[in-house]
Amino acid sequence: MKPIWIVDDDQSIRFVLEKALLREGLPTRSFTNPREVLAALEVATEVDGPQILVSDIRMPGGSGLDLLEKVKAKLPGLPVIIMTAFSDLDSAVSAFQGGAFEYLPKPFDLHKATELIRRAVEESQREEVAEERMAAAPEMLGQAPAMQDVFRAIGRLSQSMVTVMITGESGSGKELVARALHKHSPRANGPFIAINTAAIPKDLLESELFGHERGAFTGAQTLRRGRFEQADGGTLFLDEIGDMPFDLQTRLLRVLSDGHFYRVGGHNAVKANVRVIAATHQDLEQRVKEGSFREDLFHRLNVIRLRLPALRERREDVFMLTRHFLQQSARQLGVDPKRISEAALQQLSHFGFPGNVRQLENICHWLTVMAPAQVIEPKDLPPEVLGATLDWGQTLVLAEKTEPARAERPEEAEKPMAMALPAGFAATAGALNGTGAQAASASAWETGLEAEALALLTSGRSDVWDVLTRRFESRLIMTALANTHGRRIEAAHKLGIGRNTITRKIQELNLE
Image 1 (cartoon, rainbow, N blue to C red):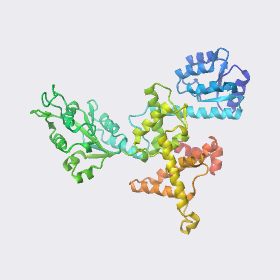
Image 2: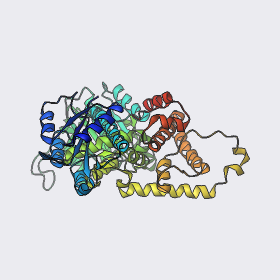
Image 3: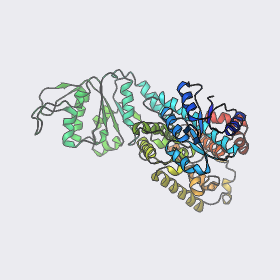
Image 4: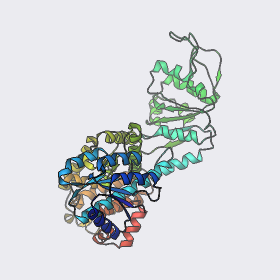
């Protein structure tokens, strides 16, 4: 493990922290001034570089705030803890603007100091793992079973030229799937051309797709190649195909049938060597019944259907996606990436995300700009997320008031305790009482559980037990660890399980 770097001109402070951290099994390296630290950073390797930097503010030979700025420029992901006397608290607050992880007021309680450093170490290790994953991340992210099905389908289609229909709600990432299908196909070296048929006015869409000859209409001063010609030898992605005008559907069907089309105003057929991938958020079968979408075109496009799950169906991916988008937003804005606490992640994961992955990306962009501190806490989440949590809490309170008590229903007395918490339960508990320690009554959350289980069962999934059990165990362990400030043995004791059991569960549930 990499050492904790301690910077302070006071030898007694360095000595006390060194001994305390040594007892915790944390290696240290001490410095007396910022100049020594900067010199050491120049020659530090990946192995002996700092895991955490703990620095005083006022030292002979340099300021801790100046050191913070220079270290962050070199190692933006390094957690830095600033030590300060009470009279320097204003400086400590300003240090947060420079990206400090936390400040440690002097004189400090040694137990609290080591606990803070331990928390910073865990955060650092978590960020290192996240960065490694991001560095090796493919163009699409997802660990949920539903996303793994999508990845498997992309793999099976990788050597195929077959037409694919991608269905899914708006913002769920349909274009990313189309790009992945193109990238892993024999046409990968050809162009990928995307067009949103709903975003182009009807009278321009025909020219946009098929091009036009010079003089075909007023303003057509030159020949223009359409998207089909631009995609020659590659892939054409037709997004929101359900909104295509009916008369253009006939022309599209002809292209898909024989591979030829005519530019607007043209008399010579143009050959199209194009693979078509279509996408829609609409129910095309229903539009066919209504007569607004051609049945023969539907069957021509619907050779292989690939359904992309909504984000609420893959909540376990919210953690990974959030960290990814925070890193991405920071790169786009040229700022240090912000970290997000486990509590904030838990609350965010229970948001409904009507805008799906696109909405989560926008939320992360908002947090990068608007969150006041470098570590995002639940209170920093945007209003739509906090408001949704409150609404859920009100629903639970109503359920508690209206549902008969468990003891009043003898037929329920012998039922075993349910094995999963409903979506939003943890966030609700926090919204109702601020700690999550006193949750809504059993009858209330069991009602929510029944609704959650029913929704999963009716969706056609065959892994409902595993999904809900994982969520229940994850939430229970995370709540216990939060209650014990991360002390696993104490958390295991309170849960009534063994130390080895909680360690194994943390690994199995990817809670490290």
